[in-house]
Image 1: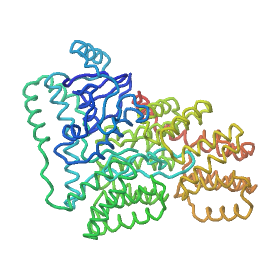
Image 2: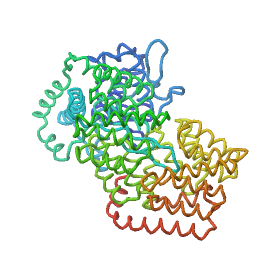
Image 3: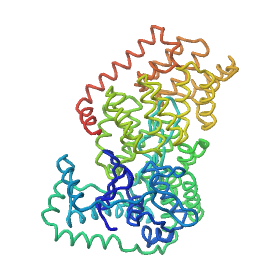
Image 4: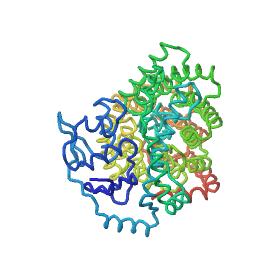
Length: 614
């Protein structure tokens, strides 16, 4: 079978335009994942061996079977498939892979009708020789850019690449926006989220770059000449890259590749390669920057000791001593500070990274997220919307915009954004946490529990256990809540809030001595420059000590530090003991006043954001 439109179960795959749809939803399948799917579709339902896949999808690059296995996993995640109960693609032990059903090639006549229907619905379509040329040019533009970025870093010059988004555990923190699009990032992390979560594609995969309307019409009017040019461009971009003659360049490429896959084991492989480079040359700034990102990922994404984020900061500062204008090193420094909860410093460094490289979309997304955390909702939304057309587009931008809208009171649009992300990205823990939490905040407890159960089958993160505990408290199930909080604390032993909740709801409960010591330590460590959620934790500790006035004072401090989630304070069982206090109503009013000012300032952007969510 050749290029065209295929039906596979409930999927519609257009191999020319590199699009995958399930019903009205377009799935994010790009780069090598799409190449793999397209090749399998052309093979029907026969078993395809590893060697065939390596030759058809990866050649001339030399990779092993492990790389194929990892890419199949990423493809399944993008399609929402389950390797244990395969619907689209199954493993055939010892032989290779096979589609679960026979793909059907849509006939040309049917394809023409589908294209006409899309035209009538306002969806742009480019067909024929010009269309193929446009698709090829679009598909490989990102690949060429990525290659230049790798070469620039390997040569020691500044190169733009996204930073990894941190994942701080805390009450209701959304997912960060700067995790995965970069090769130095680890995917699956919070849109910086709260600093909580993403997925990264290998640096060598090609990300489609959207052509403008004008270009598409020119292509339609000049089909044959541009088709020829497209073929020539395709040939140029498909020439095998020269084999690296410098071992350092090759090691950097491999390190970036593994870091970009976004799985824990691959990040560790990247760390080994970066450390090898630094053993050879302790002043290799490119290796220092890459290792800084990877060390921070250990803390933010994989729950390791904060010590690694401190080491990440040291590495980033060492790189900046030699290259003060390296935007990537500045972004690495910001990420290390972000992971450690040093918000004021992280914001300053993200601002510096954006000033050095205005096209650095991931640093810009991370900065927008932290503005939102600190209560500047209108400015955050403006910056988020400006990134919709960025290339590369921050992977978790949609979740970040949904959270922005939720805080601004545009609940219906936020719900659509969360629901869409939950459907399209089953492998993303931040999408998985955001959707049930959205339902929880609306008091739709049964739906929230159902969505949370589905999310727990997909991934594991402290946010999911914290939400499970909160839902149990609203049901009056204290023992189940205690078990959930204990699981969150075990999963992230270095995060403060899960430890506090686990002790507050354990049997026997924490004694007065522990409460006093814990409160004093937290009071000494937090300020308005840090996460507003830290003041919420202090509120709970003071409540447990019977200090309601102190608890209300801490809540007010959270508002002053940027807390804007009124719905959470009204819904959560954790704060119900304060609900009858006159001062509690005052806190809610203070949030409402501040949000209303932000709503007025962001009115036009809110409307634009609502229109942009399907």
